[in-house]
Picture 1 (spheres, rainbow, N blue to C red):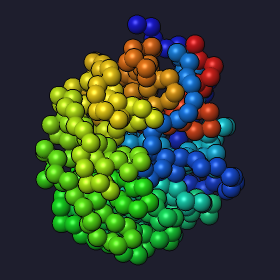
Picture 2: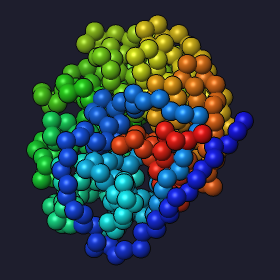
Picture 3: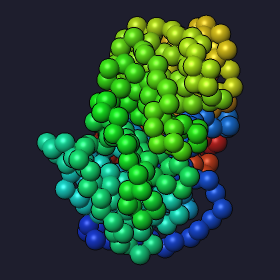
Picture 4: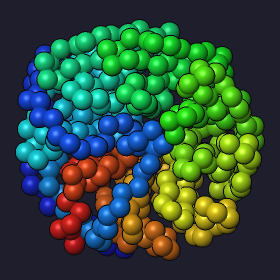
Length: 380
């Protein structure tokens, strides 16, 4: 197995003070990557073809490590947080650092981006509460800080130009663009899943093994489905079907308008990342390092692959390649058609961030707060 040749063009280290998170606002007409998964449905597919190798264009060394989340991006800027409580911004084309803002706690999920404002959650250390911060990066000022009674370790949603958060106790909050709660609903069901939405419903799983179907319009639970055990993965929605995994390693496809389980397949170990998909396949990995590609229509296995490290980061799927990070300091380039490993990127630390495609770059990250910016067209 060949290693990818990595050419380091530039390394940037953030040394600026906590008060300097201020950028030149340049509104552009682009969708960007405004939340984890890009869209509320959580779609980790990009319609590009990747060569066998990646060329490293730029590297950023932050001051703290990451959890298993991703960066967000828009207006030519990349935003990311770290577990030391810092939120950062930098220019994707020039590598310019716009500094960071430091908070007391940890930022363990991806920021969300609406216009010139970023929204991020600071979870208090050793306390079961958190704060949603609304920050205007053009003015370099906080708009609002809203304290919540529960920890929010589930990825944020942008829904109808609003921020939706689900805390670990099972309460769902809808925030306006100023960062104030417009409405909330407490399901009283603890959860460690991640929500998704198709604009009509919000779906997430609970520790008791319930898939919650919540109507954002009616502001109530309209359906639920009982999994075999705790729902531990993120959820993803496509064409009225919710894909998710549980602690026993089951991957599910549930049609919520029909209230019908379409299929279930067991992968052999706990699933904690998000299922990823194209038109014909759903792919999911587990904590034993097994990757399963399942036919969406039939639920039959197309291929499986064992890799060296456990999988808790969500991959990026393209036309031909799956980019899968693992905790054994690698990111695999896997052939989507047959599961063959085409190349392997090796890091000094554990691969932590889910890869993101933005403006012809692949953005990934490893332990100790390192972010990598790759050119996927010139590699190999």
